[in-house]
Every structure is written in structure tokens, then in C-alpha cells.
Length: 443
Image (cartoon, rainbow, N blue to C red; front, side, top):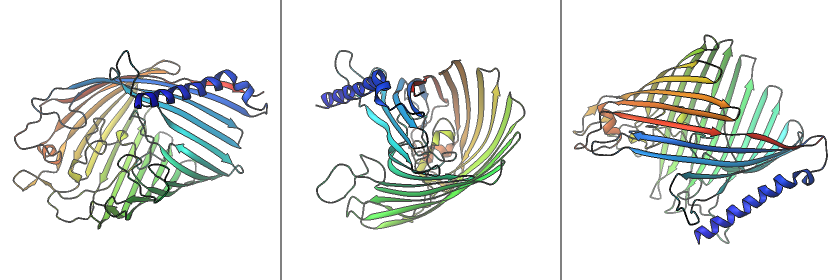
């Protein structure tokens, strides 16, 4: 039944796009501003994991696979009055479907939204959409992940002169119902309701600042009670000539639901600072540090003191091997990540990046004997490249290696009788074919 259902969805979506592509000149009135664009993305990515996400142990075998994201999207715009975006997505792993039968892979709408302009300053955007703000430390597209982040929400936007503001509202349910509004987030979006206000002001050509005030509502499975988590903070950006500097601070408070009818209090924070200097078109150097509060491993308090990055693009930060926040919570001890990176453009088509990260816990780590262990978790080196084969076709790849310290075992809950392999590395190679095609534009 699942196969039949998915086939119907694939046929319906394919038919929709076929109609739009072949008959688009007849679907829209001939005004001076109608435009229809088609975006296609094919992004296969091969990975060799020998310690990615979490340390690989002695006796375990490395993993190797090819995953792929396939997207087809349409965007229609009519001047500053109306925009509509629709994007379908299939995420697969090569070989997981039988060759001679219908697949069980699900096709879904990654985006499906409409944006209405009441005037040049005010707009409303409703439907399934990507919510990406600032450097994506709290809300991001998470583009590295094949599935990405998406939200079903309504967005009220304001933009005039040097000021921008977005107010976003979401209310989630598992299905259409006749009674009650209980929401189980284990199989759907991670929150029942979301409200936030984001603002940004451009003080000058070199200085800007943003602020975020967010509330998330979660529903307890035991007694259906509602708990709310608030996140407040913002960013400051300075850019002049060859120098870029940014600073970030967020604070979390409120309650989170747990398996009983009681709630636990949250008090957590994060701060980050980074600076980049572009010496010339070929070479740039960066330095930065991120601190995310944690909780002592021997703490008996039910309260939460570890920061939750929520719906961030975490792969951009904390090392490319994704040991932190992308994967396990590493015993909720938080993280202090200090890093150096260099960007080298050896030609117009080829660029390289090398980064060094030093990781430490932000709270006390406890060893197998119950004593306090060292805070150093390890060091990571990331090497990546990007090569533009042609317009809309780019090859990217990289090599990363983790040099884990003993405390990594403790925070990753590896048992005392297990040993990490001496070599922890990750290799990846991807090709991204992503043309953006103008199908129709009224004259």
C-alpha cells in the first residue's frame, strides 16, 4: 500500500510539472512582470566514514555509501505583488531500492509557499518554507543534510530603508481531527507551536545588528501539558574593506517537557566571535571561538543548563565530522570550539579550505571511576575543495581527521572495555548539478 501511495504522489507531481513546463505561456496573463523559473538539483555524495559522527571502535568496520538529493522547483513572480514557490524533493541512498519493482522512497514537498505584497514594505508568506536567518546558528536551511530543514508557517515581513523584520507563527498537528489538538512531535515537526520575531538594522555600510526573540511550545505525552522554551539573542556584523568581524550571543530559558507531568527549568547560553581577513583575492585567514554552555556529567539537578542549537545549520560549525550537535548530545557537557581556517583560491575555478578545531567541554567530564577528567575532547583537521566544472555544475570534496582525547570516550558514552581506533577519519566527494532556468517571462 505504501508503494502504491508513493507512486500516486510521484505521478501527480510529475504531471503537475509537465503541465507547467509545456503550457506555461498560456497559464499567465501577459503583464509586464510575470516570470516563471525552474530550478533542478541533482546532488549525489559519496562518503567513507571511519569515525564520522561518532568515534569508530576497534572491531568495527568503516561505512561507505552514496546518498543523493533530487529536487525540482518552480518559482513564479509578479513584480512586487505576488511570489509562489513549489519544490519537490526525494532523498535516496544508491542501491536501497529493488531494481525491478516500485520503490518505497517517499517524494515530498520541500517547499510550497505563496508570498503576497500589500505594498513595497509589507508582505505575508504562508506555507511550507525555509527559515534561514543571519549565519544560521539558530534557524538555518541545513543544506548539507540532504533532507534539509523546512517549516509549515506564516511569515509577516516588513522591510524599509535600513530596517527588516519578520514575525513568524506556526501551529502543528499530526492530522486533521474532529476532537482535541494533541500533537506528537516524535513523528512530525519537533514543536507544537512556534512564534518568533527577528529584526535587523543596517547602521551603516560597515555595521549591522540583528535580534531574535523566539518561543517554542511542546506537548507532554503523559498529561498533554504544554511547556514553553524561549530563546533570546542576536548578532553584530562589521565589514570594512578586507576585514569581517561578527559576534553572537543567545540565552535560553523556560521549561522543557519530560516523561512525567512535571517540567524542568532551562537556563543556558551560547556566545561566539570570529574574524576573517582577506589579504587578496587568493588568500584569506580566519579565527574564531564558540562557547555553548553545558551540564556537569555528575550533576543530579533536573534543570537544563546545556544550550540547544534548535534548527541551526550545525554542519557549518563545530567541525565537519559532526561529532557535536549534529549527532549525539555528547552527554550534554556543552562545547568550547576554538578554530583557525584558511581559504585559498588557486584559480578562478578551484578553491581550497583548511580548518583546525580544538574542542573542550564546557562542563565537568566524569571518567569511569567517577572522578573529574580533563576538559579537552580532541582536535580536528578539515580539508575541503570546490571546483567549478561549468556553469551550474560543481564538484566538492574533502578529508577530515579527528585526534580524539580520552575524555571523548566519556562524553560519547563508550564503555570502559571498548577502545577507539587510532585513525578516525572521513572522506567525501560530491557533484552538484543545479541549473536555474528561465522558462517564461512576459514581454
